Image (cartoon, helix red, strand yellow):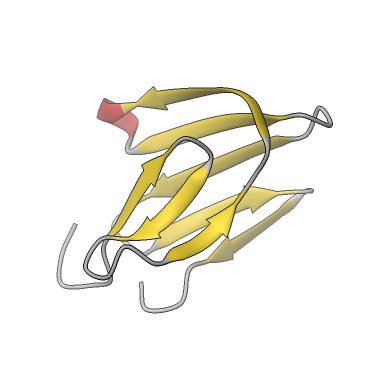
Length: 73
């Protein structure tokens, strides 16, 4: 969505699409990728819910009751 930093999600890791560097990492029990919503929902090993969501404003990490925009987005 637009000219901003691009990320790839794979197996509990959020990667910088250009360098492959790990930006964030979680120990996950399961994940669900929802392409039409530009969303990935994770359930961590300790039972937490994490969502990675992209909208017209930014790429967001929703975790522990907080919603934070990823830098560069």
